[in-house]
Amino acid sequence: MSSARFDLMVRNVSMASSSTAWRPRTGWLACNGHTIAAVGAPDDPVPSARTVIDGDGGTLLPGLRNAHTHGSEFLARGHADGETLAVWLSSVWSRLDGLSPQDMRLAVTCGALLSIRSGVTSIVDHLRRNPMTDEVLQAAIDGYEATGIRALLAVMVRDRLGSNNKPVGAGHLTSLEPAARQIDRIARFAARTPDRIRIGIGPSASIRCTDDLLLAARDLSRDAQIPIHIHVAETQDEATSERAEFGMTAFQRLAQLGLLSDMTACAHCVWMTREDFEIMARSGAVAVHNPVSNLRLGSGIADLPALTAAGVPVAIGTDGAASNDGVDVWEALKYAALLPRRNGALDGISSETFLDMATVSGPKALGGQSSTQLGITQLEPGDPADFCIYPAIDAPFVANDLFASGLVLSSPRRPRHVVIDGVHILDNGAFRLIDEAKIVAEARQTAARLFS
Ligand SMILES: [Zn+2]
Image 1 (cartoon, rainbow, N blue to C red):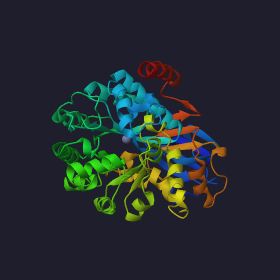
Image 2: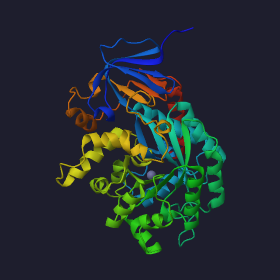
Image 3: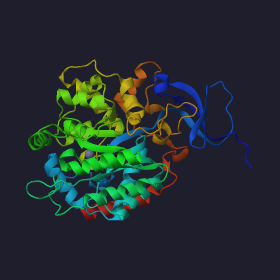
Image 4: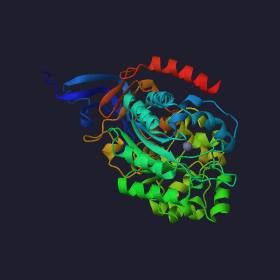
């Protein structure tokens, strides 16, 4: 029997997190089970552990959270380039709404693997497939579970028909599953998912849902204590239609129906009125900023400085891989930092705040659950063991306030090791739980079938 004091130990690293104001400190870090158990300075005696990772002088950072993506899009990277959201939606989804359970599992697995490879340990997947089925949803859960990543699957629901009698934003569909069945599925699955995988409810967008469905989503969120995840004010066309059809903005309508709270995340928030900022700030809902996707589809640029100035919690997302065309949160952070400067505003949000958005403050606002469930870590004893170790050359070389700026602007993208929930997932660049080459070979065949 092993006499090792800890399950897992990382030595010979510099560590930085929100709790050190993103200044690196050298030393070692030890884990037991799912949590960080001890942190030591270089001179402290290094305790024994069953698994020892040599950080090789590299940098250990908390795992990032991708707060908005669509896993089912992963096989459609590069598709419908140069199209606006309206055209893109029917082009991409006329193919992806038919994903089989096997296709769905493959798509989310690939997305999770690339996410882990780019430093993401936790994903919010606004999971779409019309119609959703128990088999497809279970396949997505199984796919994520097998990779070891944390995921919130906010299952997409929609029920509103346009004047042409077709689903709003999904004109290729001829019918929709009854709303009650969509809600019932989410309630059933929310009660029985594995630890690292959780279920939420994801109205597609306010304009794509009736009042009845939005109210049912609100009630399910309250009764089952699950998060609400929804696209809001992504394009100018949608914002204009909302006003024309409901006589108010999407934020006003969602607030009126009781959907905005600290259990709610609103993806995009590009087209907002002054009052919308106040509504969001009062509600406690989080805005998920997706700068790369918004540029890819020509949707506009969310006013991030105005959101933060209003006191709205902000998280960072990539959006789906068909409008990004990856799942790289470091890249999204860099865009988020640079876009407000396009008109000469150079003194905006600090680099430390951006890093907090991707690791602490944004994730904490997503659904009101405990830090442990969400995998939020500041690399302190008792925190979840969710972290990445980057090669020494991949992070800034100084330990002062240039370090945070260097991280955001130089984007260290390829960790050598990743630990999620105390499990060593990526080991010196190789996945320990998954045969990546086999998955990629299958994905090539499936993507060719779907998109050639
Ligand atoms: Zn989206």
